[in-house]
Image 1 (cartoon, helix red, strand yellow):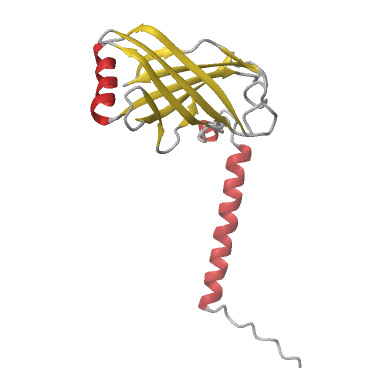
Image 2 (tube, rainbow, N blue to C red):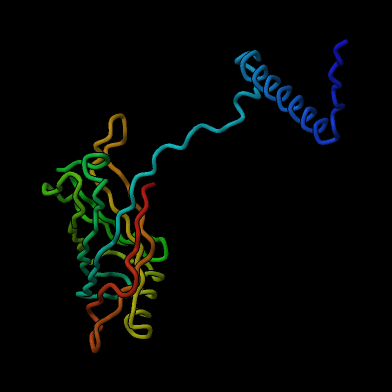
Length: 210
């Protein structure tokens, strides 16, 4: 007579493993049913926000020289010579290799000078490079706040702080004609013994597309 093999009862550990496997399989099929069977117009399917659009690269204010020709309480004659550093991945992907460049200067967020539109035609694709632009004002009307800020910089602090904006020809399809960049404020320090000429001092300002 053959002996029947005895089946050992499940141990406690085995029971736990079986329960965990059952729960895992149940959750998997429940989740799959929710995302596949549920109708497309269910609001639960739209809880994730859309992917952000690519952010254009920043440019950098590489240099800025400020020369005062004449200043009174009501008028300013001055010149700003600036260079901006264009990153390698901005030309053609965002801005045109040939186009226009315009700059604007601010003090305490108040615009004080804007350049004429200046042509550039020497940008190279996939290459970092510099673009130069000048802003000139002659007998520009200025308010008391601007005059005070400049004169305090000349006489007391020996430095002056400017904000700046740059506008370049946009080459992206279905976009505005220009790309606008706003720069962090830059500190210019007057040369020793001079109250007429100041140059960029400290860290270079970055400029962000807006």
